[in-house]
Length: 194
Image 1 (spheres, helix red, strand yellow):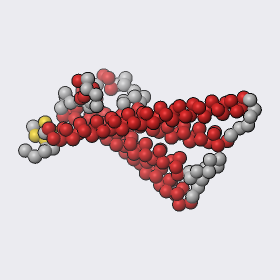
Image 2 (spheres, one colour; image 1 turned 90 degrees about the horizontal axis):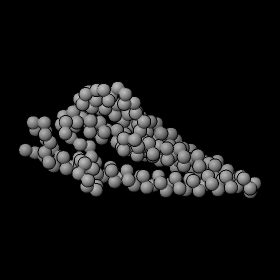
Image 3 (tube, rainbow, N blue to C red; image 1 turned 90 degrees about the vertical axis):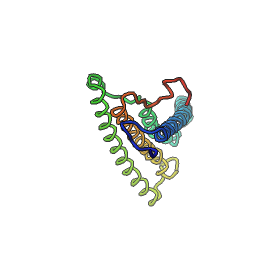
Image 4 (cartoon, rainbow, N blue to C red; image 1 turned 30 degrees about the horizontal axis):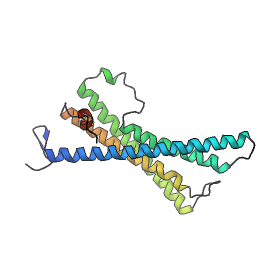
């Protein structure tokens, strides 16, 4: 038998190992994103605190700090949504899906994850187009003076990351339809550290 071929509803060990490696890689990258988000949150907290102190004691108002806070907040919300998607921490309506059986629930998961992935790639392409227009015209932010496309870059990359994660989740739902005992994160069940 050749590697990766489906035979009698089972996947050969090589294909399974490749997918396991891919899921471990995504999990490690998600951990990196979580650490970056934590660092950015601390920086954002310091910036907001400094802005409050400056306004309270009437030492002035730094408009570039306001602009920096807005940019960081928007960018981290997209990166945070990307991380939350992989950890299954996004808000979802489970009232109906909890009442469905295993197969209809996973088929619904496939459909919703594919729709979410298509929406993210469409929105990412639109963002990328906007960003390239900003590069061509050399638009800069008002207070910070940095190229405006830099503020859009984390958004476009996060949408691409969400696209990949949506389709990996759809793959996970498909595998649960084909093979009922298939686990998305098999190492967590055994207590192993990935």
